[in-house]
Amino acid sequence: MKNIFFVLTLFLVSAITVSAQEWIDYKSEELAFIAKYPEQPLQTLEVIDTKAGPLDMYMVMHVTTSESSNNVVYSVIKSTYPESQFEEVSEGYNDEVLDSAVQGAVGNVNGTLIFENKVTHNGYPGRSIKIEIDKAFIYMNAFLVDNMMFISQVICMKDKDENADIKRFMDSFDIIKVKED
Image (cartoon, rainbow, N blue to C red; front, side):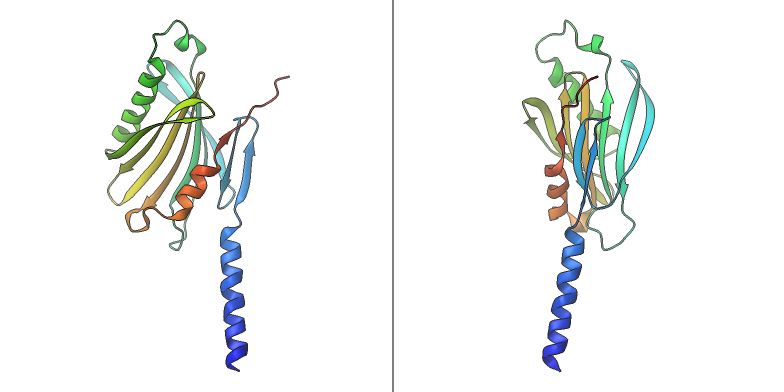
């Protein structure tokens, strides 16, 4: 009887582990990115006012509702700036845009910047940051691809900081080249 109980327990633990590992491969040719999400995300569009004028901000987001989930939010955000904003600019302009994005992200949530690293993705400049807010942390990667900003982010509660699913999501993000008609 003990052997049957052991085998059933092992089977259940294995089944739970396998189902927890099955993430969805999400691909958007319209937004030119791929990422793995724990469940099917929702896509929304918000128009935001900026110094460059109104920008379309596309968000592909999954918000978890389960307390057993490692993270609260998984999202990818894409905004396209006017091409004219990047014409005849000085060297270092991309750094200014990325630095402004970091400052805006921290300011928008009244958070504290824990770290900021300059990174690249497929040769494109970016920032990897961690922001502390009241009861959570926001992990964010921002990449500037010509006149497009891609942001991938995960929000986790403080007691689940540095869990493996943060890296899993962030590492799954990639920019894809889409054929133009």
